[in-house]
Image 1 (cartoon, rainbow, N blue to C red):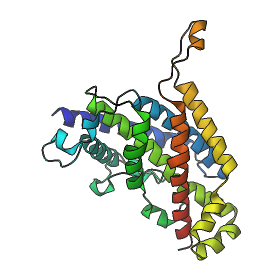
Image 2 (spheres, one colour; image 1 turned 90 degrees about the vertical axis):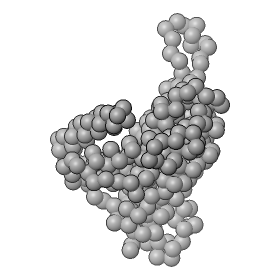
Image 3 (cartoon, helix red, strand yellow; image 1 turned 180 degrees about the horizontal axis):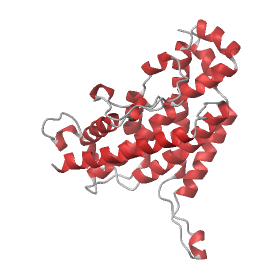
Image 4 (tube, rainbow, N blue to C red; image 1 turned 120 degrees about the vertical axis):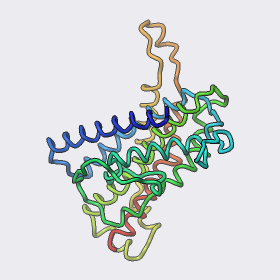
Length: 279
């Protein structure tokens, strides 16, 4: 009963958010993707990811959250985090979240139909974009590689809160990585003569080189780490406190997450999209 009530509350909140965003979009019809707008979008998403890292670092590992044999949820086969993600995504699907081409679910096979009015989102992507979803890779890297360097070992019993924090961070990371579809489309439209020969030749390596700007990637990593330093510090009112800054988590983890996973996977999405662009 409690779980149903919580899902109902989430549904109401999501529907309210969707209607608010629809109203915003209607009042701002100039919703056009450009290279500048997608860059700004990527920068804004950095904030969400950094705050997500800070929030997840509040809890220790809480390994029972990820153990299938521990939760033993009636009628469900899987861990607690899988239960939370699947059920939350189902509610959000009913609220129309995944009608937005910027959103990609972790468990799309469990989708119910949307029950809210659909909104005509700007459609600039090639139809092949719908087949690109690398959330399985993101899921594996998140739990196998990112969590071990982000959180402390231990158990504080807050398994549901931990799963909810995981979901928020996973969705933020997934949104950023799959936003590569839009980046690739805008870049292709600006310089089709550079991309078309490589696409026709199915030259993955050539496309990856064309998409790689090491100086830009370094700037992004430095900016993300600086945001993590600023956002993740305990703020005091006494001058002496500033000399003894305490961090909520290691800021280098934010930079490393971009270097090792987020940027490479974003470029992987871009390459996959471009290879379908002329189909």
